Length: 117
Length: 114
Image (cartoon, rainbow over all chains, first blue to last red; front, top):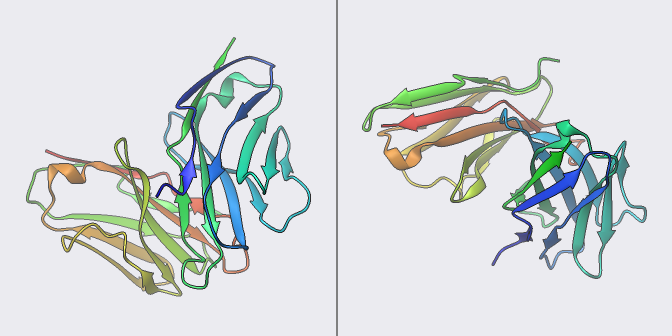
């Protein structure tokens, strides 16, 4: 069963506008972590933001914020004031908290974001 | 810090040849991960090490793949013999035990098997 679902294969946003990239996840664990990574066309994987399942506040890092809705099992990434350099693939990922799989991070299929001038 | 270092950045080889990919994790990091990225399967975890010991290799596709970590600053992923379906980008990542929230990725090795 798919653990991480990203339903938007491709997204477009106007420069300076905000955009939300969707992510839903599936886990029966109480303790887990959610991540977002950015992969520009150059290929490197860049860590953006992390949300722990017990964190009460939504994580924020500069222009990135994670809209965490635990009951819905969603962890959407919001990018405010989009810039041309935000054009990239974005991956949602989850680390489950079980003893044997604690260090495994499972990645979603990704969403391709294109920022239009 | 220099970040995670991978070599080579690009590798083109012929089917049947042995391929060795190399990774130097960030100094002080206790965990090392090998991932493979393809269009069809996305980003998959192949194997990870903790303190140089392989913990989970359930993602290694078959016996042609092997990985070693002889010391804290070096790991290899070997494919022998290589096949065209092994063509992918192979990433190495590392993290410190106290920082479970973040894995730092290397630039990747783009492998093409002809």
